[in-house]
Image (cartoon, rainbow, N blue to C red):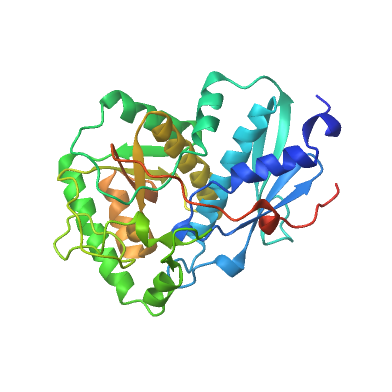
Length: 323
């Protein structure tokens, strides 16, 4: 089907798609993306000024974040009446261009797409304690299906594996604490105010991690620690491969899972420390039955807070590119 530019992506619609893209998660909430209009498509580019060389030297986390942003843009196209496709690294000579999202064929949005798109402005990382309330099997099944829809696999860990995963998080966290530049990077992206447009706000935390905390959180500072749920629900997102293409695709799977969780009344936080340390990443993969681990998620029921702010759309744009 021939795509009509006038019907698909004028300036206002492009701005709306970008606004959805900026609501994706990213390590330390760095928001390491830029967006560009390319005819009827939206290009998602890496902003290397917001990279984390100590935490994420391989760029894995950056590619996850841009994949998640691309998934939001896909949902935005769906609301406009188009099924969209995301092409990773479409131009080999342009290193910063990670994903191009373009309309493929015209069709009305499905009820599921409407529900997920409505969850975009509500989704946020919740690092606070959750309730000691079990997540129903039906809700967890919906999350695993969301990952499968994006060629990923989400493995919900049993109690034994949860204990082993928590040990891997602690080991990785201690290793990262010894990494040169890591602590300074943490401080650089911690925000003390309540109106910051990026970074991790101290008022959204639950104090510093306690030395005996079972599921070790990153130390962003703050006041005394609070009690966390005794039996956290953990799941591991994996892909079959470990290339940069798999990482971008994993970002789309992650965002699909997080939006499905939000739409189902769940809250979530991400524990990426064992992914950032090669030795623990491999063991986490073994723990969940194989594949390449891309993220460790904690899901449950908690008191939601308002979503974190995002940088204004004009700040994340680069000039349009013609076909």
